[in-house]
Amino acid sequence: MTIRNYNVTPQLPPNGLTVAEFFCGGGLMAVGLKAAGYDITFANDFDKRAAEAYAHNLGDYVVCGDITSDEIQAKIPDADIFAGGPPCQDYSVAGSGAGEEGERGKLVWTYLDIIERKQPKAFVFENVKGLITKKHRPTFDALIEKFAEIGYNVSWRLINAWDYGVAQKRERVFIVGVRRDIGITFKFPEPRPEDYRTQVLRDVIGDLPDPGLPLTTHVQSRYNNGGYASFIKKHPVKKMNKPCSAVTTRFSNPLDALFESEITTQLQPRRFTVRECLRIQSVPDSYVLPETISLSAQYRIVGNGVASRVSYLIGVALAEQLNAALARSLPEAA
Image (cartoon, rainbow, N blue to C red):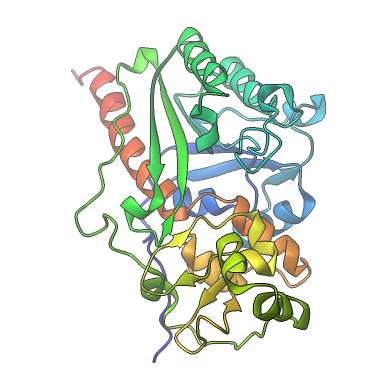
């Protein structure tokens, strides 16, 4: 089988809008936004390895450092759109559950404070599904209310990436706000019939050569001798004819990244490669992680990212709606 050049975020012409990105990670959200025609002028992340991956693929405008510091705050430029996903571990089901009381959880309010101070035309906020669960819903509701108080028309949606042409059941909360004086409320793009739950693993990684990466002796022993049924319950093997479960930072653990390829079998699964994880995140093959970044850090960078096709489609819709509204507000030529 011929290996294709995978890309489900085709490049669009410039849309005339600038973006400042926060908590940018390795740039998976930026991949989608750039392809949608945005000019990203600033990006920030605290993780040096994520910033290295971002700079390698997207541009040296990324600034590594603590977003709460005066030094980084002073570097934030004006931009049409602010985009970011504050660290989600404190709201994640798999995380500490500390919510806004956790050190990372507080960063949702840091992001809001930046938006309030800089007043971009619009913002995009991404986070885990846990933010709208019963435990953290008061924080979410307060966040929506505060965004409205600082002058934005706000809409939000729980988006499953599988609905938008991504071979992954990845649910994330997206909040989009448009400054009230612009006069519109963002409408999320609806899934197209050809995208809606049509992609499975075979569609996105089936053309890649099987590296035949064997499980380590330790893992294979646990798999074969540790009780097959209980092992599968804890670490289900992904199937090529189904979408993947959400790619997360847990994929750095071989036990959580097992799948049955076209060559291996249910009894001899193998670990996803980083390239396969990138494709499952709908990242084009032109994106390459530097070899200077450890393998575990590479998996973590990919797992922390936003599915690029989802940010692409949201970005396209936002640019269309925002530019149409801005054009209507221009005075007619005499």
